[in-house]
Amino acid sequence: MAAIVFNEASWRRRWKSDLKSQPWKPFNVSDKEYLLKSMFVETDCSYELCIWDFTNLWYEKVEQESFNARAKKINPNVEAKLSYLVKFVQESIEEDTPSGKATFTMIEDGADKCILKMKTKLKAGVPFLWEFHFSLGQQDMVGSQLVKPLLAMITEMSRRQAELCTLLHKKDQEIKDYKESGARLTTSELVFVAD
Image (cartoon, rainbow, N blue to C red; front, side, top):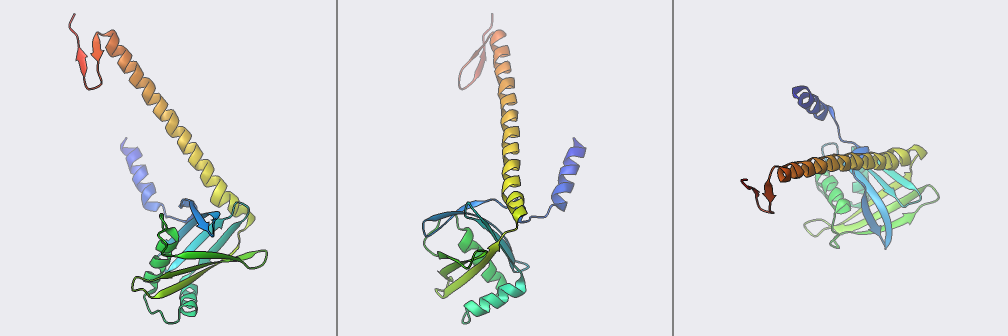
Protein backbone atom coordinates (compact mmCIF):
# COMPACT_ATOMS: atom_id res chain seq x y z
CA MET A 1 0.00 0.00 0.00
CA ALA A 2 2.83 2.40 0.86
CA ALA A 3 4.43 1.74 -2.55
CA ILE A 4 1.17 2.66 -4.31
CA VAL A 5 0.89 5.90 -2.34
CA PHE A 6 4.55 6.73 -3.05
CA ASN A 7 4.13 6.04 -6.78
CA GLU A 8 1.00 8.20 -6.88
CA ALA A 9 2.76 11.07 -5.09
CA SER A 10 5.80 10.73 -7.34
CA TRP A 11 3.63 10.79 -10.48
CA ARG A 12 1.77 13.89 -9.26
CA ARG A 13 5.05 15.76 -8.66
CA ARG A 14 6.33 14.98 -12.18
CA TRP A 15 3.03 15.66 -14.00
CA LYS A 16 2.77 18.97 -15.82
CA SER A 17 -0.50 20.33 -17.06
CA ASP A 18 -0.74 20.83 -20.82
CA LEU A 19 -3.42 21.52 -23.42
CA LYS A 20 -4.23 17.80 -23.84
CA SER A 21 -5.20 17.56 -20.16
CA GLN A 22 -7.68 20.46 -20.31
CA PRO A 23 -11.42 19.81 -20.66
CA TRP A 24 -13.53 20.78 -23.67
CA LYS A 25 -16.26 23.32 -22.92
CA PRO A 26 -19.26 24.42 -24.97
CA PHE A 27 -18.71 27.84 -26.51
CA ASN A 28 -21.27 29.83 -28.50
CA VAL A 29 -20.54 32.63 -30.96
CA SER A 30 -23.48 34.32 -32.67
CA ASP A 31 -25.74 31.30 -32.00
CA LYS A 32 -23.23 28.89 -33.52
CA GLU A 33 -21.96 26.12 -31.27
CA TYR A 34 -18.29 25.29 -30.80
CA LEU A 35 -16.17 23.33 -28.35
CA LEU A 36 -13.29 25.21 -26.74
CA LYS A 37 -10.23 24.06 -24.85
CA SER A 38 -7.61 26.40 -23.45
CA MET A 39 -4.40 26.46 -21.47
CA PHE A 40 -3.32 29.83 -20.06
CA VAL A 41 -0.03 30.31 -18.19
CA GLU A 42 0.04 33.60 -16.26
CA THR A 43 3.67 33.29 -15.24
CA ASP A 44 4.78 32.95 -18.89
CA CYS A 45 2.09 35.33 -20.20
CA SER A 46 1.20 32.75 -22.84
CA TYR A 47 -1.69 30.56 -23.90
CA GLU A 48 -2.78 27.76 -26.21
CA LEU A 49 -6.31 27.49 -27.52
CA CYS A 50 -8.24 24.95 -29.58
CA ILE A 51 -11.70 25.51 -30.95
CA TRP A 52 -13.68 22.86 -32.80
CA ASP A 53 -16.59 23.78 -35.05
CA PHE A 54 -17.58 20.09 -35.42
CA THR A 55 -15.87 20.06 -38.81
CA ASN A 56 -12.44 21.62 -38.33
CA LEU A 57 -10.10 21.97 -35.39
CA TRP A 58 -8.60 25.46 -35.08
CA TYR A 59 -5.49 26.15 -33.01
CA GLU A 60 -3.52 29.11 -31.70
CA LYS A 61 -0.42 29.28 -29.51
CA VAL A 62 0.75 32.70 -28.29
CA GLU A 63 3.98 33.29 -26.39
CA GLN A 64 4.76 36.33 -24.18
CA GLU A 65 6.37 38.45 -26.90
CA SER A 66 3.46 37.92 -29.32
CA PHE A 67 0.91 38.53 -26.57
CA ASN A 68 2.61 41.80 -25.64
CA ALA A 69 2.81 42.98 -29.27
CA ARG A 70 -0.85 42.11 -29.94
CA ALA A 71 -2.00 43.80 -26.73
CA LYS A 72 -0.19 47.02 -27.68
CA LYS A 73 -1.46 46.93 -31.26
CA ILE A 74 -5.13 46.27 -30.46
CA ASN A 75 -5.30 48.29 -27.20
CA PRO A 76 -2.71 51.09 -27.50
CA ASN A 77 -4.28 53.13 -24.67
CA VAL A 78 -4.37 50.27 -22.13
CA GLU A 79 -1.48 50.06 -19.70
CA ALA A 80 -1.55 47.01 -17.46
CA LYS A 81 0.71 44.15 -16.44
CA LEU A 82 0.79 41.38 -19.01
CA SER A 83 -0.04 38.78 -16.36
CA TYR A 84 -3.22 40.76 -15.51
CA LEU A 85 -4.22 40.91 -19.18
CA VAL A 86 -3.57 37.19 -19.69
CA LYS A 87 -5.73 36.40 -16.65
CA PHE A 88 -8.45 38.77 -17.88
CA VAL A 89 -8.49 37.20 -21.36
CA GLN A 90 -8.62 33.74 -19.76
CA GLU A 91 -11.54 34.64 -17.50
CA SER A 92 -13.39 36.27 -20.40
CA ILE A 93 -13.13 33.26 -22.70
CA GLU A 94 -13.51 30.52 -20.08
CA GLU A 95 -16.46 32.09 -18.27
CA ASP A 96 -18.91 29.26 -17.46
CA THR A 97 -21.97 31.48 -17.27
CA PRO A 98 -21.77 34.24 -19.86
CA SER A 99 -23.00 37.41 -18.19
CA GLY A 100 -22.84 39.58 -21.26
CA LYS A 101 -19.48 41.04 -20.28
CA ALA A 102 -17.74 39.87 -23.44
CA THR A 103 -19.11 39.60 -26.96
CA PHE A 104 -17.49 37.38 -29.56
CA THR A 105 -17.45 37.42 -33.35
CA MET A 106 -15.92 34.73 -35.57
CA ILE A 107 -14.48 35.86 -38.91
CA GLU A 108 -13.15 33.40 -41.48
CA ASP A 109 -9.89 34.53 -43.05
CA GLY A 110 -9.46 32.21 -46.02
CA ALA A 111 -9.72 28.43 -45.98
CA ASP A 112 -7.13 27.81 -43.28
CA LYS A 113 -7.41 30.79 -40.90
CA CYS A 114 -10.07 32.40 -38.75
CA ILE A 115 -10.16 35.20 -36.20
CA LEU A 116 -12.22 35.20 -33.02
CA LYS A 117 -12.75 38.81 -31.93
CA MET A 118 -13.59 39.59 -28.31
CA LYS A 119 -14.99 42.92 -27.16
CA THR A 120 -15.33 43.63 -23.44
CA LYS A 121 -14.40 46.07 -20.69
CA LEU A 122 -11.70 45.87 -18.06
CA LYS A 123 -12.70 46.18 -14.40
CA ALA A 124 -12.19 49.95 -14.50
CA GLY A 125 -14.68 50.20 -17.39
CA VAL A 126 -11.97 50.71 -20.01
CA PRO A 127 -12.87 49.11 -23.39
CA PHE A 128 -10.71 46.10 -24.20
CA LEU A 129 -10.46 44.18 -27.46
CA TRP A 130 -8.72 40.92 -28.15
CA GLU A 131 -8.24 38.78 -31.25
CA PHE A 132 -7.51 35.07 -31.33
CA HIS A 133 -5.82 34.23 -34.65
CA PHE A 134 -6.52 30.56 -35.34
CA SER A 135 -4.89 28.39 -37.97
CA LEU A 136 -6.29 25.10 -39.13
CA GLY A 137 -4.93 22.45 -36.76
CA GLN A 138 -2.73 19.65 -38.02
CA GLN A 139 -4.51 16.41 -38.90
CA ASP A 140 -3.15 14.55 -35.87
CA MET A 141 -4.53 17.22 -33.50
CA VAL A 142 -8.09 15.89 -33.84
CA GLY A 143 -6.83 12.56 -32.54
CA SER A 144 -4.57 13.95 -29.81
CA GLN A 145 -6.79 16.79 -28.57
CA LEU A 146 -10.27 15.32 -29.09
CA VAL A 147 -10.47 11.58 -29.76
CA LYS A 148 -7.84 10.28 -27.29
CA PRO A 149 -9.12 12.35 -24.33
CA LEU A 150 -12.70 11.26 -25.08
CA LEU A 151 -11.66 7.60 -25.26
CA ALA A 152 -9.69 7.95 -22.03
CA MET A 153 -12.74 9.51 -20.36
CA ILE A 154 -15.01 6.70 -21.59
CA THR A 155 -12.52 4.10 -20.35
CA GLU A 156 -12.34 5.79 -16.93
CA MET A 157 -16.13 6.03 -16.71
CA SER A 158 -16.44 2.32 -17.59
CA ARG A 159 -13.86 1.45 -14.91
CA ARG A 160 -15.75 3.50 -12.32
CA GLN A 161 -19.06 1.92 -13.32
CA ALA A 162 -17.57 -1.58 -12.96
CA GLU A 163 -16.13 -0.60 -9.55
CA LEU A 164 -19.52 0.73 -8.42
CA CYS A 165 -21.27 -2.43 -9.63
CA THR A 166 -18.77 -4.54 -7.65
CA LEU A 167 -19.40 -2.44 -4.51
CA LEU A 168 -23.17 -2.71 -4.96
CA HIS A 169 -22.88 -6.48 -5.37
CA LYS A 170 -20.83 -6.67 -2.12
CA LYS A 171 -23.40 -4.53 -0.28
CA ASP A 172 -26.24 -6.69 -1.58
CA GLN A 173 -24.37 -9.76 -0.33
CA GLU A 174 -23.85 -8.12 3.11
CA ILE A 175 -27.57 -7.31 3.35
CA LYS A 176 -28.45 -10.87 2.36
CA ASP A 177 -26.06 -12.22 5.02
CA TYR A 178 -27.60 -9.91 7.68
CA LYS A 179 -31.11 -11.04 6.76
CA GLU A 180 -30.11 -14.69 6.90
CA SER A 181 -28.61 -14.16 10.37
CA GLY A 182 -31.94 -12.79 11.67
CA ALA A 183 -31.41 -9.06 11.33
CA ARG A 184 -34.29 -6.79 10.40
CA LEU A 185 -33.30 -3.91 8.13
CA THR A 186 -34.85 -0.45 8.32
CA THR A 187 -33.82 2.69 6.47
CA SER A 188 -32.27 4.30 9.54
CA GLU A 189 -30.71 1.42 11.45
CA LEU A 190 -29.82 -2.24 11.46
CA VAL A 191 -31.64 -4.11 14.19
CA PHE A 192 -30.83 -7.66 15.27
CA VAL A 193 -33.78 -9.68 16.42
CA ALA A 194 -32.97 -12.20 19.13
CA ASP A 195 -34.38 -15.71 18.54
